[in-house]
Image 1 (cartoon, helix red, strand yellow):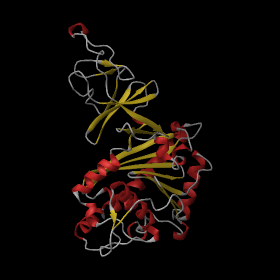
Image 2 (cartoon, helix red, strand yellow):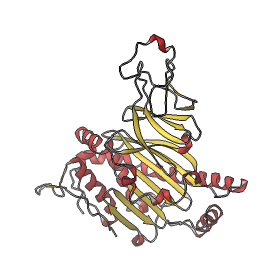
Image 3 (cartoon, helix red, strand yellow):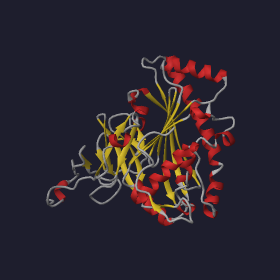
Image 4 (cartoon, helix red, strand yellow):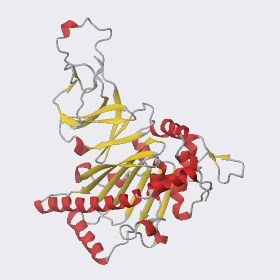
Length: 380
């Protein structure tokens, strides 16, 4: 299949700006997990595209606000996380209700009556999916449930309180976000890059699904007989019947959900410049439905095992990204995509469609505008 994007689309400042406006800012973004604010009054702060936000747990319901007080423009909190019985500004102590409206204002008699009442916080849309918290800065963004169809099964299989958080970390890569995304969704490089750490078998049994909103890969991980028996034993102890099949759900453009046995791995890619990006990765492991001291220890142990394996695989991939990015910036070639890399083709098609690019399968041919995804379903 043709390589639908040109090498310059992986380093161009103008392309980066178009992608941010057309693909990223209007999107739902994974900003944290339920473990980040498990109790009433817990909160955490983040930045989305330079916009400071605050997510707060109010009696088990989660709400997201612009982390700016309408009084004198201070951030409500400069802490990464914490607990406060009220939603309160750190500067002058203005308090706000769960809907963002002004509550108690210290020494309120010093303010003349405000037209329409005191100012309110700016609130953003928030949705919880499994153990994950998503926020959208765009009020016109469709509901998250629409984005997650047909990918919801990967997190909806168990209730959110069954997922125990193992670890979250960040990786900064010296490469365009598409370099990392394309590498993540194809299995062609496994034999040469992940010789001992991550392989599939048999290769012709890998399943691909291509949808409007993303892609799905299903495969069997190649492992030693001992490792297979041990994984099956752990899975049986925590949740009998969990599939050992590797499933990767890629929700365009930048969210990846990976499931195997009792593990859930989540990764989101955020562009930080035309030639750099940041990956945030979390690993979760199922809790036993009726926990014991033994099962709690086993869940923690399996979380450490899986986290170590994921970090090793990501490090092996990361060692290649500088070379891939350098090649992109100097390549005179058209590029091509094999059937084993068809999910790369689907991602490139999505980028081309959203950004209004023209497909240049051959630089000697007349460019043709990409007007539709590769297919609504199917794959091999």
